[in-house]
Length: 469
Ligand code: ARG
Image (tube, rainbow, N blue to C red; front, side, top):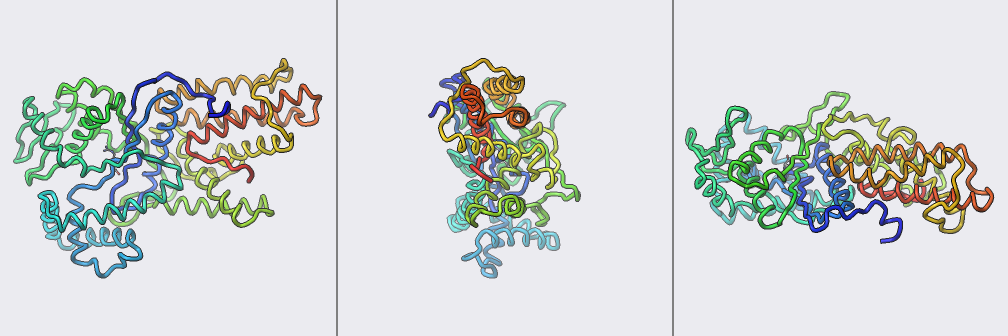
């Protein structure tokens, strides 16, 4: 790491390991804009944890199991040849998914047919398993494109199906501790008066989302050796995680206290659009990102007509995607976020493009200066804006620490805006280039430190900083 890149790195968590579950979409469904949150908040917390000296395992708890795969396999066998699986595999998969649910509304007996196929899948039917595997592969190719665009990386894919062979052990453990009870043919763990019971196995023998999460938590602790186990998942799943953590605690796992649900609120669209994949009325993440890129390309072309097509495309991608991500990370994650294109893409307001723009300004000053400025000013600073800037830049380490402690990337995003505001005052009220040599040198040191912190801060939020825009 260079001197600049080491900024903000601490050794607080040496030897400690964090397992963090983020993005984790559901096979056969396009990622919707809610997955944006699970994706960028998760990746940002992961990056920030690394600055604090933790070793991090980013886990993709892919939604690749459950009765819907029986339905989907049934639909594929029935209608698969009517779709272009060869050329448009993912689109076809989603179309038959939507079609199944539409037809099942008219003919409820389809549900039972789907459940039966799922039972076969759970019982090890290899023909169904092959179809299922194809669904998973098709979906992962699709998601990878979006992860690449968003700068997201996982270290391990451990889909829900991974835990199939471990579910029996979970039930036996619960049984041994006397926690598992029968309730109308199903097996449940009662959690007292404050919470509904946690369903472990349905009356038809099928396992559940919670059963797989119990197996997964034990795996993360016992095999991945997690000191902290984090789940970046929407606030609508709060009850689920409360139940899972409570069952772990009742089972005597004292590490249950190291499991945390990092909840986030939902997107609010002005038009009051709701997001549900069942009927295909949903705001797809890819559409949002493409629109952001297109809108940004128009603005960039206006501001900077001299760019080549390739330059414009690359800037539009970095700025457009960054704008959507920054907006997602800017507010307290538990709150709902309003989706307002004008604010998100503004080059002047509290936005990603504004931070990138300040970075570009620093980069361009350094290009004009013609040499690498020092990292630290060496003279006593006289202008109030210089001192203010130093004070803000010095807070960077504490900001990262705070952002990590609360699992709050918004602390870092807000801080970057503050750096920009203070830098902007410094820049407007003081001459930088062309000043007397020692003043110029120390002011350029401030420019460089600002540039490094903006660059690094954005990078922790998985946002790129183009050199010009
Ligand atoms: N697949 C789920 C969804 O898209 C999120 C999974 C979160 N992680 C977990 N361990 N339950 O809603």
